[in-house]
Amino acid sequence: MVEENTVWNQSTAAVVEREGKILLVRHTYGAGKGMLIIPGGYVKEGETPQAACVREVLEETGIRVAPERIVGVRFNMKDWYVVFSARYISGKAHSDGDENSEVVWLTASELLVADDVPDLTKKIVNTYINGGGLDLTDYYSVENHGTYSLYC
Image (cartoon, rainbow, N blue to C red; front, side, top):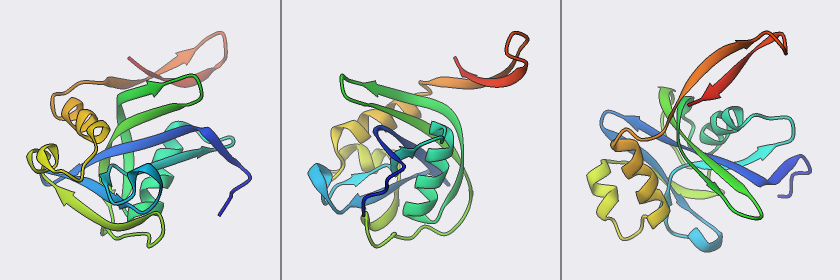
């Protein structure tokens, strides 16, 4: 289904850990078909990457999360992709029956050696488990008269 308010060159994803396991979805289309990846998707017009992360994880897995850190960002000439670590809040994991065929929780050691987990997901999870990334800091801007978020 094509959504008119989707920003096709901006996407986000999340590393969600609960009880020592990482949340993954089995992709049903495109180059990643059949592979286990971290949940995520495209940003909608007027939506922050953080809000898109929350929405996409919920839509794809039934899990509510709160983004906390930026684990990584990929830029190229046509798009960008930002990955957050996100704190599990609630929900029971289940497939959306569309973009993914199953939702699983694997330990980092299991997923890092799995043949059906792509290198990008492995790299992101490895960065996460080693504590890499940027922390969220809120700050007040006198010039712009408001509170903003900064990752540094």
